[in-house]
Length: 308
Image (tube, rainbow, N blue to C red; front, side, top):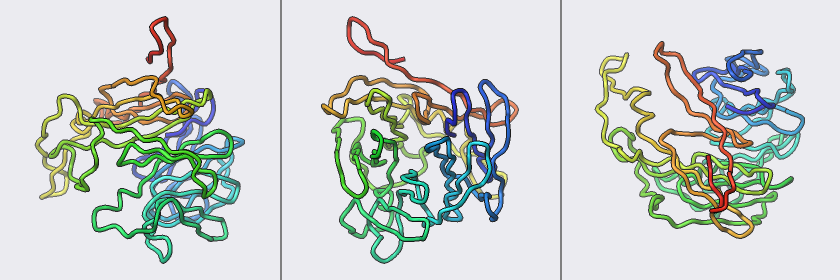
């Protein structure tokens, strides 16, 4: 999901390439793209970003491309990116910065990569050390704008956030807190093993404050038995169970001083989409997906800053 304009949001089909533009509270306006391999089509939508002039950028991580649409949903062009990209950010009409494990000579081991429309690739943000099996998740980053011409890149598996201008690091923020322990490199279903903390999203607001959303284990977390799946022999946990496994910790940081202004906890799994908006994903009683929109804001009081 992404915010296009006030009270208008882009929602991706979770199992295909179609994107719907919805107006709050629940009005469908039009469709952007569709499932496929042709121009302006996607197999699986991994991420949606909105750039200058309400230009819409759609990451199809399965096919390895970023499709570019205008605000009316008309396809403009495409940028090829490596398969398996985790997140991206548009840094120009013909250039994107991507995050993920790129398995190519000279790029393996680096978390960040600038991709030009002509295919040129510049990798940076690390020392190029090769990681062992299961450790590639250490390369995952999440992006947000930083001022006018820089970006923030958050390590998903550690509370470390870096500022970048091009390939030059301009800032680094780190927090050492007990609820975000060092990742042990083990990945297992959250229904069977207490899930580890991971940054879910970041967003810089108009005041220059950095909002950090981190998923953590639910305060009442306990293992959930798997149920029979439609495919014989498989076991799954239901979406309802899955949502009960997590809480979200929201922190607001003043990056100019490195100080934390607010720390709050929600019993929902929340994902930020910019301008203070976050969403939670649920499944309705009829089995249909339900996105619930929320808006977080700071409230100043005589006792200091608060959040709601």
